Length: 258
Ligand SMILES: [Zn+2]
Image (cartoon, rainbow, N blue to C red):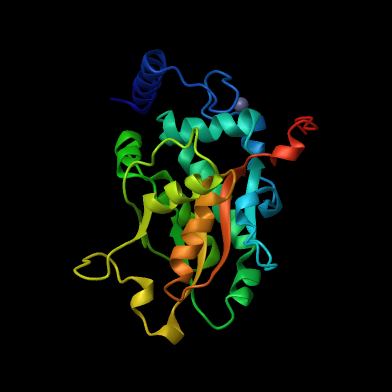
């Protein structure tokens, strides 16, 4: 086969593939592109601190809430992109989102190493249930966490695990919701554990500082529970990164979409 013939075959295969599975922008649905320039641009700017909008990150102790950086507001095209990447089977969007979060982590690298003082840094993903990982075919949050670790020049470990499918939060009051989230997460077992070394198995003085990673920040309840679980074994959680954050409830009426 000549080079030209090879090209035609490749083009034909591509065209056939597009016919079978039409490609559309994960953000806005524009055809023939996995993510259009406009939707891609949503992820290219430096992130914002969003912890003030997440009520559950308030530790009620006068201590400042856990600093969280988000790349976008969880609405419109950004929301559609995250939903497509997470639950729409659009694995082709993962490299773009991972790269964006890696770049954000790199921007905060110096600051976070400073906050960690003389501890080393470890990046820990907020665990997804094994059911959702099976359904998605991949652990999306863990992929994001690996990218954050690269950006920070930190290690990465899946030290937390989901215990079971979370019960639906609908109809639960604030305390019951907290209990529900709390019961759904756990630390990986120390004894008999055959995975990578767990960060809390090092001597107390050498335990790392933690950066958490999740896909979306809403109330902050899950990050708060992860923080409690890790601080209980002597690992301070110093910040978190998420792709997107919902608008705080009191700002939702005045939202202009900007
Ligand atoms: Zn688009």
